[in-house]
Amino acid sequence: MTTIDLHRLTGAYALHALSDQENASFERHLVGCEPCAQETAELSATAARLGLAVAAPASPALREQVLRRITTVRQETPGTPIRVLPVRAGLKARLLSRWALAACLAAAAALGGTTVWQHQQAADARAEARQASRGADEIAAVLAAPDARTRAAELAGGATGTVVVSRSRDRAVFVVSGMARPPGGKVYQLWFNDAGTMRSAGLMDPDRSDQAVLMQGGVDRASGMGLTVEPDGGSKQPTTTPLALMAFPG
Image (cartoon, rainbow, N blue to C red; front, side, top):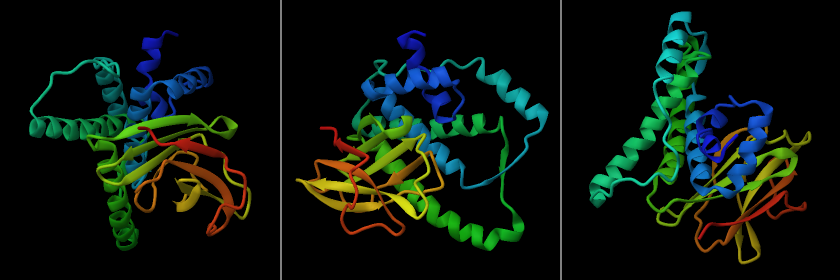
């Protein structure tokens, strides 16, 4: 497998469509490739938004149509030079690009199912969807920020973590893939590293191995982040040895 092939596996990786060998090769590549790390974070966050709906089997005709169309689309290699646009036009194009990624993921998701809302749960679903949508929109805003910077690291058990920081928005997003479920009665907790003092940045969903989390609170002057295992409900200060300590990208 060549380096160029690895650059083109971001979408398949985000959708868990790689073989074990390809997955391991791509994760090794991801640690040292910032463009791929950022693109993977964006695609994973978009996939998380698709998870707000309930899946129902797609018709064979829809699956065949999607498979036929994706064979005619070539994924652009990360880092490819692009034409410089005026500031306002460039920002608009960048935001449109993010939603284009969402559209591509939606089409790929149709291979396994289409999204439908269950009418008998509409009231609860609408409330949950509004809350989840706000969180997803905030995550998307960080990922789409012009000054967004990423850093990836290998975590315990073969998991991969990527932090995306936007200083202009004063927010950070942590995207993880392949995270093992925490022990019973425990939860993963995120922390901002404020010059050696750890400040809680919220809890991760213990039931999801792949997720994008908007870290709670502003980045402020934090130089990095940490990840620990804590009792259910979290802790005021870390009580265990960090599973990961990552410096924020400059």
